[in-house]
Image (cartoon, rainbow, N blue to C red):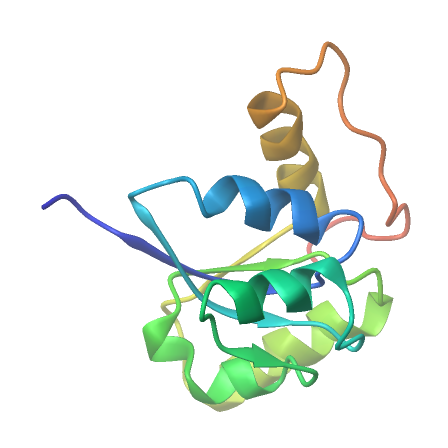
Length: 129
C-alpha cells in the first residue's frame, strides 16, 4: 500500500465541496475531518454520508494536528486561517501544512480540466498571513 495524505478541510461550501467530492475518489487521500459553520452545507452532508468526522469548530483540528498532513482552509472567513495558524503553533505542530486558497483554486482548475483558473470566492485571502 502506498502513502496516504491525511487531509482536513475547513469550509464545505462553494470551494470546499467540489474539492471534497474529488478527493473522495482518490485512494491516496484520507479525509480525516471537515469543518463548516453550516451543519447543512454540502460539505457537512458529504462528511455524514462518507463517515468523516464533522465539526462546526475548525479549531478542533489544532488539537489533532498530528493526525493531519494537509489542512485545506477555504472557509471564506479571513480570520480563520490566522486563528488556525496560531492554534497550530501553540500546540507545537510543525507537521501540518495549511493550504492557501490560491493553491486550492489551482487544484480545482486542474481536476475539473478547466481552461481558466477557477475564480476566487475568497479574494482577500492573499499572502502568508
